[in-house]
Image (cartoon, rainbow, N blue to C red; front, side, top):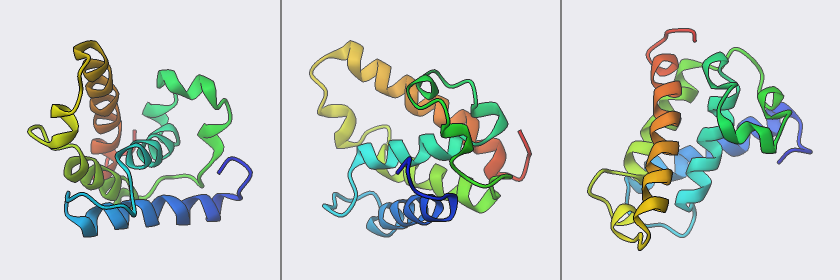
Length: 125
């Protein structure tokens, strides 16, 4: 996705969220939980409050992947896709064997939610 122009990246991210939302949190082969996390991380990295997320170091230019400002609707779609894909009592959390890795994943998702929520509510952060 790094080689794609910003409009193409946006299209891929929106399509990923749409598939997750349409699945309503149900299991689907068209979108994997990891894809929702990755797409949400791209959106979050392009919000001022998300520029310091620790995983941005792996992709130094990720903060330039989308056109600014990030629309509240896009942040809202990301938040909704996260909520539907990773509900607190969902299979994703019950499937972990290693508690430390599960806690690490939860912290990453919580960070994404914290960055995306204000933007989805129309606050510019």
